[in-house]
Image 1 (cartoon, helix red, strand yellow):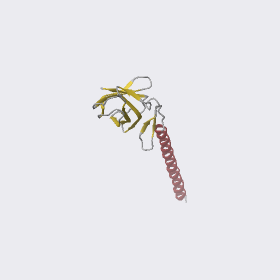
Image 2 (cartoon, rainbow, N blue to C red; image 1 turned 30 degrees about the vertical axis):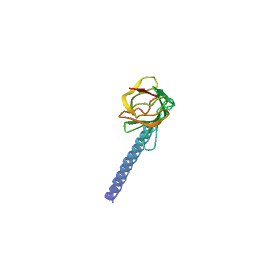
Image 3 (cartoon, rainbow, N blue to C red; image 1 turned 60 degrees about the vertical axis):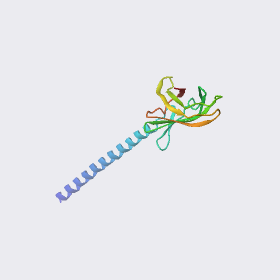
Image 4 (cartoon, helix red, strand yellow; image 1 turned 135 degrees about the vertical axis):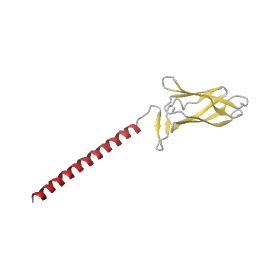
Length: 155
């Protein structure tokens, strides 16, 4: 009878130990998940994360129409995913004569006015007649989704 009692006591002790371990592992897993969600939902001042992981710039300064040389850049959208930033926009020849193929320099600016990216001649605009528009697509292997402004210039 004493041996049966010892077996029952040991069985209860083992069950309690297993229960404590399972509880600790589940609680730790839940805490790690919460910490990960806090990181994922970290709000950037000028970027928001889309469902697919793409970060979309929301700066009103970037979305303003930009003018340089005889060009006007509008409808600007800046996105980043996997450290690949893409600037999409519409570029229009607002001059009175046709433009030649033009290399464009892009500078990405933070809120303090500091240049955080400079792409010298990374955009190419084809020949445009006066009033004609085309899609501008500029890419960079650099995360600049949280930028405040973009400055375009002719190279």
